[in-house]
Length: 329
Ligand code: NAD
Ligand code: UDP
Figure 1 (cartoon, rainbow, N blue to C red):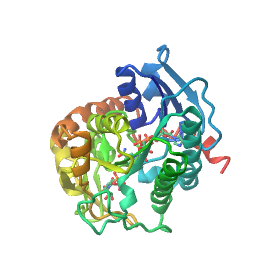
Figure 2: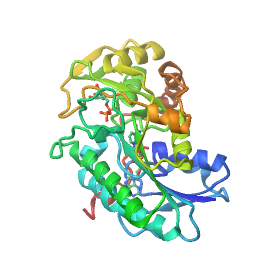
Figure 3: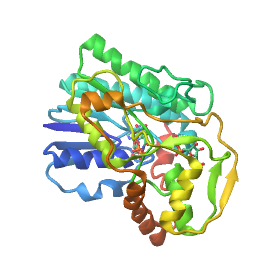
Figure 4: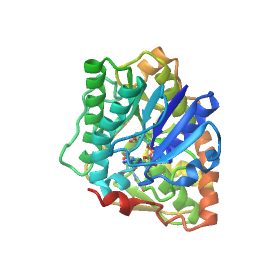
């Protein structure tokens, strides 16, 4: 069995490569490094069951040989990244999804789309079941990501209905763990790096907004199960344990034994006030349940950031390839 994983040099894509390889799959990883980094797949290079192709998936995708699956994870994912790269984000969600679906169709492969809890926008239903259509501002700054993913879901369902393709859609909720970029701007990375350096913790707004944090191994396990299941409709995968941003800051400070102060900064436009997955379907259909709670997940994640903070300047953003990727817009 052989799968293509787009976004393979990113945080989630690289963990997914590890899991499929561990299960005996051959894996082709593809990435243009706009927000990912070769370091994330360096440990796989040279393996006979792994091949890496540097390519922008918004252009025609060519992969030699058979494929049984295409898992489309390529896309900037952190708000800081997609606000800096709005047009590449729209293109990878639309053109990139179209190319990845076309490749899967040509190869007779099963397709899995990495979608997001952001399709629910700033939700008016809480927690969010898959049946909720969401509350998204299409013309706000976050619209470039939210609408790209909503379009990608629509395109995936159209390929399923019109071409009879085997498709899967995972709606991923805030996930954290080793291999996140220290400068990616997401709340977990920011808080841990700030705490380790003794810098002020950047609380946006009053910190009462909530998120539900999933440890990467739990997420990957849910995706692996979904890929092998019969479920076509979108499926939430996320840990339903909900925290305010202030609670997260307190946990990070305690676990890093940091005395950083809290710094209040303006709340970004359209920042969702609450987010919590309803995982009734994942439980029932996939037999999936998150196992790693926040305290243990942070314990596994903090050493990754500690190494980077002690090794280099963690404030430096590793947007390798960003200039190239922006050129063809
Ligand atoms: P990431 O930025 O670490 O990884 C994304 C990868 O996609 C990067 O390596 C990037 O270089 C690559 N990429 C982007 N555009 C590309 C293109 N045009 N061609 C080839 N490669 C391209 O982000 P992540 O957290 O690993 O997210 C992976 C996927 O999961 C994304 O689709 C994201 O929307 C989705 N997701 C993630 C989360 C989360 O909490 N991490 C939540 C919801 C959805
Ligand atoms: N946030 C924060 N400080 C930071 C980064 C983020 O208070 O340094 C808040 C942000 O406003 C949001 C939450 O943390 O309410 C999660 O932000 P993140 O960028 O991780 O992802 P989102 O869930 O918004 O996509």
